[in-house]
Length: 151
Image (cartoon, rainbow, N blue to C red; front, side):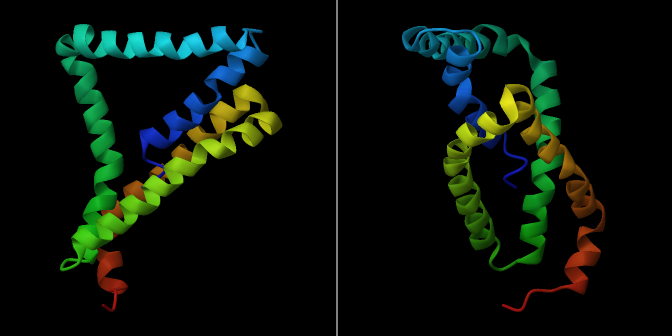
């Protein structure tokens, strides 16, 4: 579920935005921190001005999110029927902890790979997990019946 979380990838990118503007574009620390302000204005503009008129984009995003995240949740609910809330809660806690500590890996990641490959690596990892989502959606019931948990 962590791989399908846009928050995890966004937090990794946002953790290095200031460093990228300082290292690559030679901004001062003050100028690099102003880039976050421009992102804030852009997000607010998109949310309140463009957002009400962007049903097509919202629909595409919602379908993509539901096709990747929902099979994981459905698998947990179908596997742990009585304890589904606890299973989802446990996965959410693990996901949140990973999302909290993932930005700490950003510095070494970008030092070793650079900004181009450092930004591409999380995308490739996320793409590598797409088949697992399809497998869960298609064969989840047979997997659950074959390997039932003993609670």
